[in-house]
Image (cartoon, rainbow, N blue to C red; front, side, top):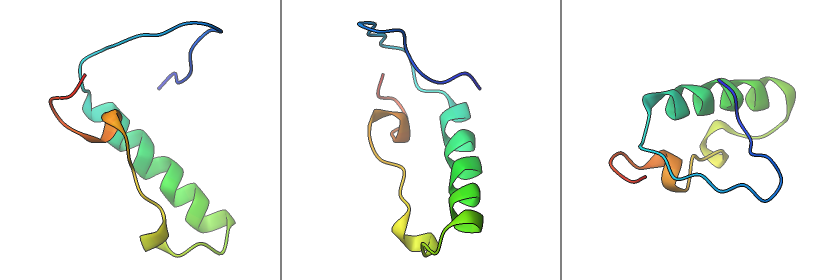
Length: 53
């Protein structure tokens, strides 16, 4: 999944399940490489809410 925007770029897009999959991947990497507890890592914002562009 390609993340990020160009400088001064704003995009509003429909929700996609790929965002949740990407979060799960990054969360696992954080757990493996830090001392953070799993319950301290949360997916927040519009990419976490189905139906919200």
